Amino acid sequence: MPPPAPSRAVQNPFAPRTYGTLESLSPRVHIWRNIVNSTVFVGERGIAVVDTQVNQALARRLLEHLKQAFRKPILFAINTHYHWDHTNGNAIFRDAGATLVCNRDTADFMVSKAPRQKGFLASRGFELGADPVVPAVMAEDCGPLDLGGLTLRLSRGHRAETDDPTLVWCPEERVLAAGDTVMTGSFPIFGQPSQREGLEDDGWLGALAEVRGFDALHVSPGHGPVAHAAELDQLERIVRWFLDAVRAHHAAGRTLGETLAAVERDLPEWIRAIPVIWGTPHYAVLRVWAGLADLGQPGWQHVKPTAIPERFPSQRAIDLAAWRQQAESAIEGGDPALAIGCARAATDAHPQDPGAWTLLAATLIATSRGIASVLEKGDCFDAAKRALARALELDPAYGPALLQSGQFHAMMAYRNGDDVKPAQRLLAQALEDDRLTARQRAEVAFFRGMCERTLGNEGGARRRYAEALQADPGFMPARLAML
Image 1: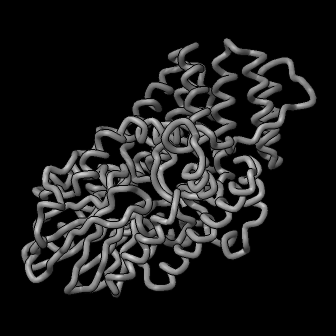
Image 2: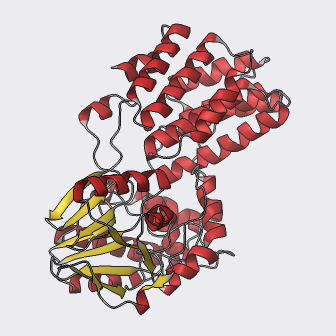
Image 3: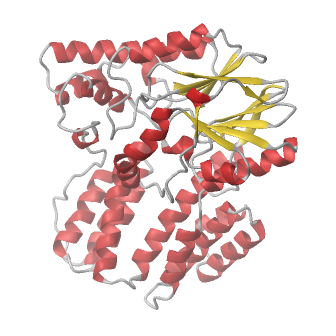
């Protein structure tokens, strides 16, 4: 989970962002808080980083910050488990001289589980880049890692979110880096939807008992703020509630659909009050069910009901402009299901018009903004990507589709601190289409500005926003970004 944003960023969705903050647990142990946490141990000889960030761009930011803050070599980069968001920065730290370390199962899973993991994440809208570098040094072969006055002891953890956790214990500071065995601040992700892993039995309860056994002053979680007794108790309470509830419905002979409806209807208020950013109660039900029933393939993503709402319009429009007006009016009126129904009807009526498919993509992305969970938003993103692919198949030079795709990539990079090059390329291609309206040219300039803002180039960003306002003086996003 990302750290709380400053109030200005909450009020302004296009404001400059800080991609990670270093929070101190002690003078020698810190957490780099971002989408995923990296735990940083600083000894006299050098530094060890536990988990290397969600992408290479964020790994570079972390590395530069550590160089400036501590001016010590990076000796080790340790992966707590195989998931992409904890391993994607491995190459950056290896190239900086760090020895990459993980356990043998993690090294195996980074390769053997990669195809399903990558397929799922691509369907959620994530740009993954090159496969993470697999560590060459195995935790099972390591003794204590000496950082100079600070020791790290690596041990195989009890299976929890994955079957391959490594726990990193610093006895001098009594800090445990627990990876995704512990998650705080948001409803947990209880295991990747495309894999057979996670909350399928009592394993996670054993993992939490193991974590408590360290008697740590601080537990650094894979996501969210630092954990202490209250946070561990909360996580255990969530685990027990979903195990008990789903098991009871399964034993009573109810179907998965009936169980989803009943469990979500009966959620206690203390669960409803937990913020939803990544995992959801919906996902937790599916995760436990996957341990009770044969679903035909690993994971449960293939049986998940879609998060995309849809309601077909009662009146049929004739031309594409009328369908567009109906879809946009429905979005403005707070009825995304009707908006998507109108946009899909437009593709039925005009299947060879790239504008219809671009309208569908834009409507899906607009709908995603009302869905809390990043992973649930991915249902909209996947369908939008397929719609844009169809539009560009019909007309590879169709500027509005290139613009829509560039917008998606630009805002994903802005939110995640990721590589802006795909967005920049698409936006430049969009500009080559003379069919773009003045408003669409303003949008191209604006999203190019968001790419510059992601890179920290505020001068370049403001020049692009000014270009957007020159093309369309009433373009409100550019005005907001200039504040």
